[in-house]
Length: 364
Image (cartoon, rainbow, N blue to C red; front, side, top):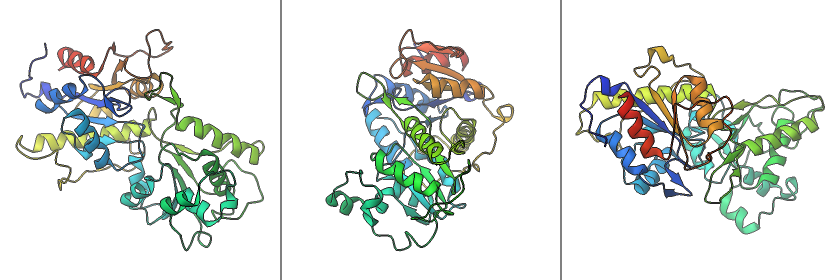
């Protein structure tokens, strides 16, 4: 039975990062005892963040949904979605193609991007661009808006926020821009190159993910593979040069470690009566520049951060490569008997509650 920790320095040099789908929720439904596990950490003021390759909504919306589902208080400052690091790119790019579900337009605008175009806006502009998109006029009227400078100013980057719904149409539009003349719609450059006309960022590279169906489903990694294949077909002998975020990249783990340190600082600098978890709080998050390294040796947790995940390829690989400990749970992608190859999780457990209590008993 886990006991409440005494608030000492020893109890504060441990921290957690949790995947969401397959660890805390499955198909939007709570996994047994997930809320109880997080409440233990809240009660003991042990820092944790949610680190997910999912996305498509604003951070405060996602944490509000999870908080309601699990009946536990979680701050929007405690979540790193796959596209959260895109916030740091809003000062670098003005006009972007925001790829993903229709909700990513609001996300991109909230992040500070000045000129956000969704692929559906381009379909509305000229349906002949994507003849097999399958979008009806009713859908286009509901999901899009006319954009004056669509074909008169260049796009500066393609940002894939989450898994798009209209793969056929989005693949065509992305290919057009990557092979355009300096990002101008309706143009095509003459010389093949491994460097696209404008940069493309993928928020994660998960080939598979777990939803309520009994077999794992294709994720953004599958979509990225198709973008690469089509680019190589359009540029014979050239492989696409792109940018990848999300687990298991070091870039995302560095970003998450900075966020975790910032949250730990907020926990320690406020009293227990302060409403740190209020989603309308004025407490400001300090975000690192994209790509800024976070030395584990200088971290208050050192190597005592536990990544709790269900996907060996993203959660466990990322933690192992980064120097964190890891807890592999059996409530998502991973199944007993799966070949872990070179991976060595710190522990393999039934669920997130067992991961938290075992880690605290042994390491706190």
